[in-house]
Each structure stands twice: as C-alpha cells, then as structure tokens.
Image (cartoon, rainbow, N blue to C red; front, side):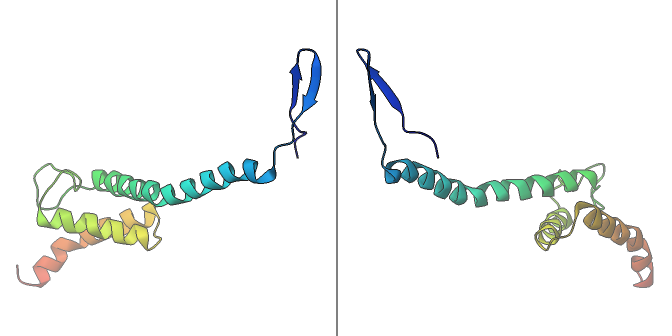
Length: 115
C-alpha cells in the first residue's frame, strides 16, 4: 500500500495515517456507481449496434430506404429481430448473413405461395 502522507508545518514534519475505511468508502461507492451505470451503457451500445446493422440493409417494401430509415411495419419487425438475435449472442456477421439469405429467398417463397 502507499506510505502515509507526510505534511510539513513551519519546517516540522508531521505524518497523518488515514483510516482504511475513509480510503475504501469512496472506492467502493465509485465501483457501485459504475456497476449501476453499466446496464444503461449496454443498452445504448445494443441500440447503436441495431441501428448500424439496420443502416446496412435496404427495406424490402420501401423505395430507397434502409431498415433504419423506414417506419414500415416490416422494417420495425426487422429491427426487433436484429435486436433479439444480438441479445441471443449472434455476431454481426451471422445476423447480416441470415437476413440477407432470407431476403434472397423471399421472391422464391412468394412465387411458391401463389402471390
């Protein structure tokens, strides 16, 4: 641990030992505050990830809009699915590959269903 602080008063040296509880209390309070703030920071990070991925994908029902820009029902559902998959632990690459594979197969599914 650190040596006790040394103070000088009018050329005389004096040392003062600070009790451990006075040193540790601010440290513990700081750690508790950081732990309580972590979920808020994680939520912002998740939303940033959802938005970044949604900006890479074009909305299949909107002309010239990304999934992030669109307010269509499908785009809202796609953002919710992106969020769900990220929370499930999928990587960005796994998620974008799955969405792109689904969108590539969509016309074939519509033809088979008689649309």
